[in-house]
Image 1: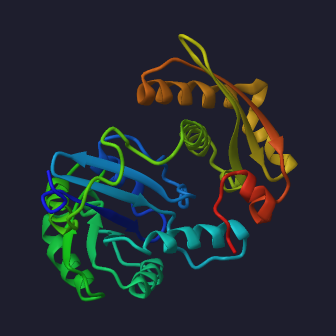
Image 2 (image 1 turned 30 degrees about the vertical axis):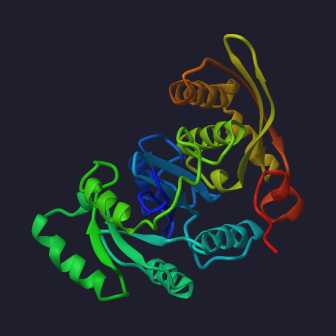
Length: 300
């Protein structure tokens, strides 16, 4: 097969926080690449999700939600990561919710305009609309807000209209050879994915301000013949949060480990044994050295 017969390219998936970008990438790739919760700013890093088919390879770049807040260094780092994902991308999927356009969408759209790349407007969460008749006015309203190649309504959670979206993406990819090995699903290591799964379970079980001060670091990963042993530390940025994460009698941290192990064994088809502890690293989210230690890109 020559380069002209095969297509391959990068697709930046962008938008404000909590529009379903990670759910969309997971659905398009067909595997859980990015963690998903109902909390804004769940995605903190740009993560590649790779779909390989006989004639095309599509590299989706799942990104942190673009947001106006920049009080902490981690927020500025996340915004830089999302903006950088558009540099060199062949096209963008600008993801918004069907339930209404927000100031956050407008802020994210301005960043897209600055990137000056072709973009499809993906109107997600169709299941939030009460009546089918409400869809056309929404699409017409959204389409007039920017210069989009096409407007495509979907429900990533339910899988609605995703094949149509994939079709237009396939046709938009430039000619070229595969960019990654055919069996690659992401650019991220097992350690990174384990840390993210642990953080996902923490976010799902915690309902106060604690989640935004959480980080997970994998200290050791040991492969034995029949099991993978993982030693992880959960960082919190306040001493008062340590007990909340652990829970009464260690109940919450045990539940996190149980849920994370179930997901990991499904994703990797291997047995896991997780050891977790909770430590305090005050104000880590506004500390450049701490952010580098936890795998965040340089913020400049």
